[in-house]
Image (cartoon, rainbow over all chains, first blue to last red; front, side, top):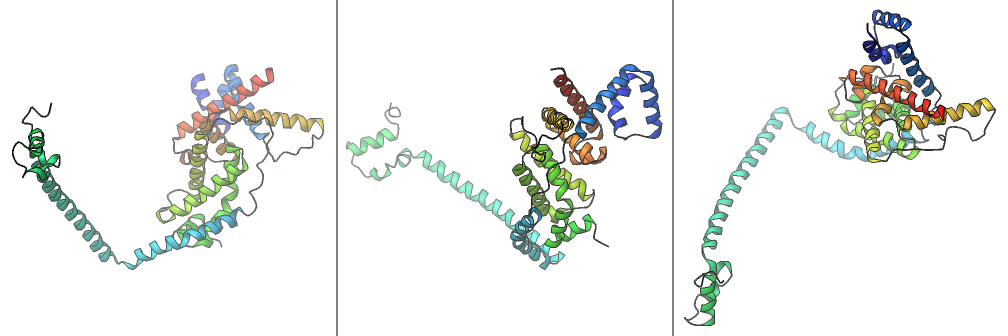
Length: 162
Length: 179
């Protein structure tokens, strides 16, 4: 057993976390090696120091009662959830899960369709600059009028309004 | 014959608050001691200990007795204390913990208290995980396996935490003695 291995096991040795055989090997090495013996004493200093720390104060008075009271306030919500779950038999739970999945799936499909319609409408709108700028109300304006000029500008006839 | 902790937890999962109360009475001291030793503040320690039990109550429906309840409780309280410490600056106090009397007493008692204060300061300089490992091993007398469970790490890691923690503690005390 070399020093490096011994020192890596000294905490375990101090805490009694090893087999009798290994314990004897550590002790044999430590008795023959000054450096490892000092390393062990160093760790023992720490353990003895910790023993000098005073005990914590008592648990605050009423701690358990306050907790019991807090627990009782939370209990009705938990009880309701547990009761509902208990009402359903396993086949009913399976059926409820299946209905939920079906609903989610339908919702996904419908939202895709709606998005497609929305995209088509959006693209149609995009093709009509007058509608984009809200100028489609002027489409009946006579040629040469100011309103007609706005429509021309919105349509990009004069180079996109630059 | 009374129910085991695991039987009480299964009863808590069914909504038995008396079982919860019994668990609190049995284990409040352990939760409080760990929290107090780590946080060194009675208000924070009480909050953490209370939070630990409430977390256990909330998780009761999912509880499976794969490990002892005691180890489970230490896991919850350790995590809460380490989270609190991570959010705070390191504590350094010149005052003794409140459990020590203000009466100076005979010289040998004064010497012990000064040493206890030095040890407290030295312990506070340790990284929180090393400190937690020492608290669980030295004061709560958990095995390496139980400490590993409580701190969600390996036994090898626990060995390293304890070894480094003790070395650092000894060096800090040695440095203090030389001053």
